[in-house]
Amino acid sequence: MLTVIELSRPATGNALAAELVGELGAALAALPPTSRAVALTGRGRHFCTGADLGEMAGSVEAPLAAHEADATRLAAVYAALLRCPLLTVAAVRGAAYGGGVGLAAACDIVVAAPEARFQFSEVRLGFVPALISTFLARRVTPAVLTRQFLDPAPLDAAAAQAIGLVDEVTDDPLTRAEARAVEISRKAAPSAVAQTKRLLLAATLPNLDERLAEAVQVNARQRMHPECRRGIAAFLAHRNFLDWLTERG
Image (cartoon, rainbow, N blue to C red; front, top):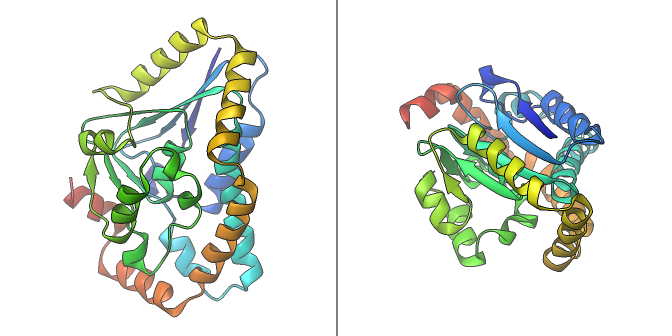
């Protein structure tokens, strides 16, 4: 059985607001016992545009503990995806930016439409890619990741595939993701998949909890930094985020 989880805030490009993060965490925690695989996708034009900048701007005066709680909830979702014993396949259409790239990269397989766009734009907003930096090196070499983090440029699906962020490019990523999930699940024993994933995670991310805990602190403190506040405010004042995505194609 295949379970499809759909990020469902299309009006914001499925940005990672607290409500959406909570819904995704609940969905991952309540996977049916008969499920053999998970397909993760986004409703509407975009997969996930990353942090909800409007929500972040509205909480700049919140205490550190509130920012830590928000970052902890998102870290728990990434950890749940990485530790999911089932095969996980991301189906990406439109934008996958910042934390949205992280959601895709935390899955076992990433299938993307040719017009999909990937970018790490955090530093240009005065923010940091703290949480996703803990596990993206599983897919992308440190040298490439450094370049993409510090000098972010949008990547189309082919370019993302070339650096390891994407496994397959197809016109209908969700249909293909579902087909891949079913195909692999039919050929692999569930217990073997779960144990293989556990061993691979232990080999590649042996200190995941500690690294995420440190990243939570970096994330929370940077949200309160004046540069981050100014960057988000300036960006939101300049233009609507979804309009900006449309202009970029």
